[in-house]
Amino acid sequence: MTTVATILGDVTPSYWQSTLLRVLIVGIVVPTGALVLAIAFLFKVMAWMQSRLGPYEAGPKGLLQLVAEVGKWLQKEDLVPQGADRIVFKAAPFVILASTFLLYAALPTGPDPAWATSLPTGIYFVLAVGSISVIGVLMAGWASANKYALIGGIRAAGQLIAYELPMVLAAVGVVVLSGSLNLQEIVMAQTQFHAFGDWGPALPFIVVQLPLFVVFMAAVQAELSQSPFDMPIAESEIVSGYQVEYSGFRFLVFFLAEFATAFGFAAIVSTLFLGGWYLPIGLDLDSPLWYVLGPIILFTKIMIVSFIVFWVRFSYPRFREDQLQKLAWKWMIPISLAWITVTSVAVVVWQ
Amino acid sequence: MPKLPGLIKGLGVTFGEMVQTLKPDRMGGGPVTVQYPHEKEEPTPRARGVIALHEENCTACMLCARECPDWCIYIEGHKYLAPPRREGGKPRQKNALDRFSIDFSLCMFCGICVEVCPFDALFWSPEFEFSEVKIADLLHDKTRLGEWMETVPDFEPYEAGSEAKVKKVPARP
Image (tube, rainbow over all chains, first blue to last red; front, side):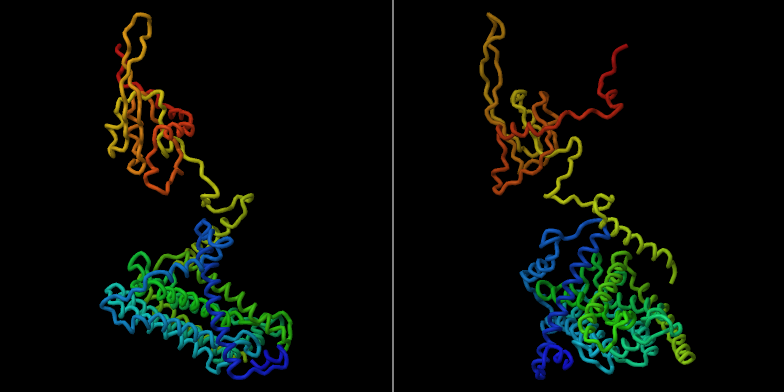
């Protein structure tokens, strides 16, 4: 934060000023990210893949559709079911949203991590915080006083917990290669990573960790409850699963949390596997240009990763609960364990 | 992971679809959507939109009003004496149509009235954009039904080979 301040002039912001700036950034970056993602990908790209145009009337070329959606959801009646546990029911969406906002605290977007902190336990913190949403889902399913919401909630919990493990193991491979849990250090390691000898540019970790990248992407897909893993919100089966009793503002919170989490996890994937805010364009790491370029590069990578996540979502049919669990426990965990072994051996042998 | 080539091909299908939709019109791309109300679709032949009345042919025989399943046609007529056709003849009794209204809020657009009319006074028109703010305005009177006649398309030729079916009674040898 101090380096940014020196760029802006000779102003050293106080603790409260810099905290306010950070809160504002997370309060603006997160919803804006969710907005861009939601419109651009969910509505328009889904439409293009289905040979139609998507929302076209709200705003130019339909870009203000999310504003219309937000307005629509806000004006709906706010219901709490009669037999529902009121406090738990009301708290559940905000638990999920809290876990989403916490994700953004650990993201590096520039050399001196421009807008976030440089947590020494970066990736560990991110994965732990991502698990809080499981509690939110269970709270929502239980407190809805609805059999089907409960079924949806339990299925969701089973799925989310099952896919936590492949996600953690896939991240371990990257951690072994870079030697640190700190997300900033991981990006820094990718700026020096010359896997195939000293020629050529620094390579992102994906080139030697492709199986783990695939496993991580699949685990992210499952954590976001996106097709083909959308058993919890299986639309034509149990309507919205654990979200079914929510309307109005509370449903909007679920909706926004889903997209903000997608944005956040895409950022994590870009940081771990694609090189984060760094591109090997020969620009010296000390140059202050990185403060502007870094976020832009990270945003582009996030968009690419999100495109892949949503592309898979629009292409595949839904997994059954048992197929989903089989995939996680029988395929993803052994593959990631095997690749971690390979990576560890390679690190010891060649470095 | 079984069936991986199939999975990749599936991704390719959706991606290809997206590229096709985003291609500009001149390259043969574009969505299948017809952007109503900016663009309008060509209606299919013999499309049923609204019913038009050719008043000259109507003799107030009441067949259409009787056969209508919804009882949405209101007809009032009177008989009058027309002058004889030839010198020294009898005055002819003719029907005059006073009121012919179809209530389109009740009409189910089945077309029985059009089929049953022996004098070809009712026709289908492909017009469908006649929504009203007040439901009472959906009762189209004689004048309005006459105005719909302008939108009735020309007679659509029968399909090839169907003329043979028009004869109902075989010719006596």
